[in-house]
Image (cartoon, rainbow, N blue to C red; front, top):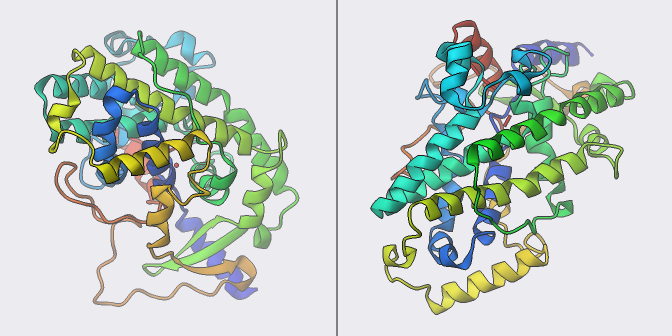
Length: 403
């Protein structure tokens, strides 16, 4: 029991958090979005799909080096009153006039970030810049997906204000990873978005509407779980980290209307359609350029065509997981998992880090430039977002959900 108590104390100092949808979910959303595109765009995006999937987590990986990145992933709507969507101007200039740019930066800018990146992607299409198209498509994909996460719309982004620390990662990372086979990934096809500003604000408002159940279901379930059963612990870089147990995750997922599994599934299914729609809208606004001219060779090979047709057929039947065609799952299998300890009852004190070994900034690999370098992945797990956001907010910087 003394060991368990010591580990619990260490965990209180080192909570676990994921910065957006977990890497696993971001990669899944990206791949599915390619299938949702119209045929005029599919060949180009399929040719670059592996790169898009890899770059879909680049915004999270940039956070350590780019001080302007953090605030782009969320917007704490509850900071703006009891009727935030009625009070908040949707146009950025009007919002700045009402609340100041510093306030918006502190409490998040994800709706406006999405619109800005969408415009940049439109320009990249006009210029025929393949490198920029891929990088900006990945960025746009990431921010749109983050807007679908309820915990990206609140100051209580990790339950830290209600003693539910770790709920962020539970919702956006653990549940998708554990229950991906039960989710329907056969999303709707992309459509042209006539009013991107109004559309993305509806996405944020819908996400905000799920917050009540997100917290209430966790609180109700916690009454039936001891600390030893509710959490598991892992040791990494000389620190002990706490996360929700598989048993609690299963109960939180629930059956039918008894848990949040349906909520996660709904947001996970809607995100790829919106991502594809934003890509499609940027392309249409650029004049619908012929993307085949940017491909070398400018047509899919016979093998590529067969692969794409097989994936499309599996997607339409919701069999990507069953047929082992989901790239996020394939990558995850090759990645090393943390040295799991188990329940609090079995947890041992965290081992000290070797004196000569430098401790990484976070659990994620070192970030790389979006356009050229490939990045190492952390298996869709968490970066230490809690400490970063709390410190940033105290200094008028910032963030949270997002996975």
